[in-house]
Amino acid sequence: MESDNLEFILDHFKNPRNYGTIEDADFSYEEGIPSCGDVIRLDLRIKNNKLDDIKFSGTGCAISQASVSILTESVEGMEVSKVLSFTDNDMLEALGGQVSPIRFKCALLGLTVLKKALIEKKSAP
Ligand code: FES
View: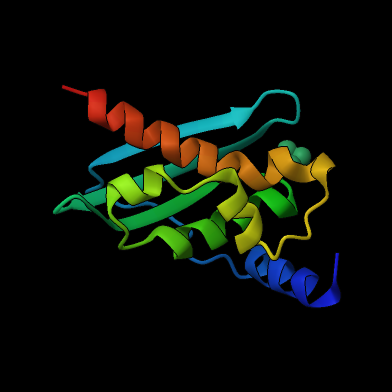
């Protein structure tokens, strides 16, 4: 991992953006990876089909926590349909493209949880 990318990821791990909960969230969703025990919870507020607010909480390794912090900054204000088309590659690129394949599951946990949350919300009554 190049040092600039490492600094960028470490900064998001130490100073996570959008960390916390939303009291009047439209939807909350939590999921983790059983094999390592890491869990991410997302609180979402959607307005006019856009992701108006997003906050995360949970515990996990540096890559998973930094990734979800970076993800929240990337998708806040985005149309829900665009968020759903945000690819694994987009996420890896947002991380600077330097995460090793062995850590992909960590890097993609937040995006997986976010997509599942939006799909669950769509099918909620
Ligand atoms: Fe669990 Fe990274 S070790 S998400």
